[in-house]
Length: 289
Image (tube, rainbow, N blue to C red; front, side, top):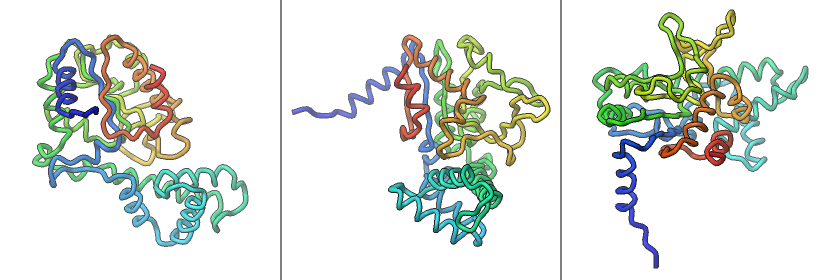
């Protein structure tokens, strides 16, 4: 009879983490923003609760339309959540033309879509409610402290699908210098060449936000991708069927290439936390490498 010994697996993980020759990377999904160190930890709810909150925040005039869409989704054998809701709305926008569906025209569906995205963006902007006394209650703070005290020959690389600033706060509160692909101070711009160069900023922790981040914008004049104050124009890959297509655009494509290049290095180890393996465009890179 075979037995699984978790303590043995923990020892194996510890050996990997203490080795200064291993190239260590982390892939963080939504579950890491959900995690709480204690009851005072700021966090972002999981998809079911997130969906519930967003629906409560929508104008009451959309109630009947949401019920109709929910019925369509369930009748199609899918679970009703924010991802299937946005996917259904995007599908209707694509085919509606000059007609109406569920008593809404194309502009009406676009308005509904924008209202949902605005609500989602506000929920993940949890940093607005964090004061300096709360930082120590964050699991991300402890993670930043570990990185600060982990003396390694190669920098830690963090890949995350999360839009929020929780990882950034955890690093910055521990005075951990990190590089995220942007250069400059006035209007930091995305430097794709630096992302593809594995020797760039060798000693700095790397943070790659592969589904975008609050505050990323495309400058309409220069077409540059810049970082600024968060707004409705944030470059985010929202949860929907368009995730795969959008991931081929910049800056996401460069971050995905970086994940692929990281995994193909000798002695690289990827720790996956809070990720459901539901994003095929990410799974393909992991499997192919």
